[in-house]
Image (cartoon, rainbow over all chains, first blue to last red; front, top):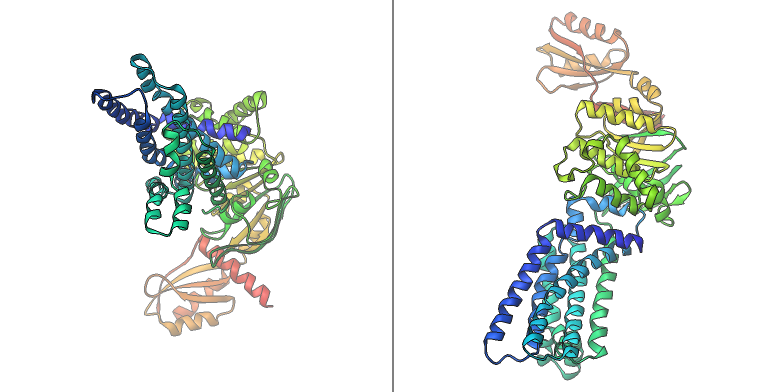
Length: 236
Length: 313
């Protein structure tokens, strides 16, 4: 576990010493603030965040691949991976350390976005239970997207290629639900369970359920596992 | 300390290393000498657990690279051929990171960092951002990260490549000073470097070991042969054939320029005198007759040739 912390700390340092973290934070909060202002200004705003949560998840679909694109691809590109993997560190520790660094950055972004419900609290009376469940949903979706992005980064030595691959995989998980309308009933049911879109809806509305929880945690676990296998391959 | 038995490594269908076997005992400094692409780096990457072997048994201090990979990695310090460091980190911060990954903490970590900073002459640059360092300093940081946990075994892949002559001398001094306390396997494609720093040289070519001996013995072996360039106006293949028939001449081949031949022969001046006499007796003009320094390529060809002859006998 010490190695996980060491690797995570280095990745967080790399995020904040480069423009990366700031660009991502400014992009995310910039778009969200604009939408929040439009929502408040529309005159029919209620003190609830369903639409904002939905936008957040959609933004994370683009932000997560950018956060994760360099995690392993950059090490391959620079060649630093050779020193890293010849240290007494397990491949799983490398994958986890890097994964957690991106998750910490996600938490920082979500913490900053807490300004919106706080503004609502000042002018209305939002349901904090709903909001916390909604945030849990956004966090789980983001954590799953990061796992996908980490895996894509482990396959590539070019950061842009890694980001594009991650977005393609995520779009598949986002849109796969659409297939369900054009296939048989049984297959459609299976396919709908794989859809991020379908799984996130209840959480966004503030309805807690274990099914989406298990769905997102499974994606995290499965893609981190794939990342470890990809590191084990040791492609030079 | 290092035992390699029948190591073979394929990249796809291409063998990079074929059936390589050697040993390095405790405290020894051994050079891996070979041209680029000979399989030096591949062998070292297997030793450092970066690449798995296709076949063969590789052990460091009795630990197998496949079964006790983490234990092997605890016992070695590795300087890769391509020194890749995180450009955004500061030197001391980077050494702290590497030291932690090597399992150091607290006082041991701090004293380890201080020791390698002094050992590698990094005092003035300890707070510099790695991306701003010159190649020579990056090489020192690379060495420092390999030494941070005072490993019993050091694997150094081309430690002096890209350095200026002063830096090369410093690095060689440093390596010599490591002998005794560390077991060192270093690779190089510079013959004198191997002679200067090492007690034993393993020559590898096209993925196979072609010779293994002390630097003195290898040099003696190389001196069994010499190469002479001959330029004759109006010389032709018939002349080349007659030169080949001279005693002590092993081989004659055309040189890079027209009317020149490269003559491989036994050691000594006799052969050159014979060649000169032959050309003059045939009434041709001898324009040039001089010994050719053996380039590394030729050293290897020479060695592979003699090996083949010995094998066929």
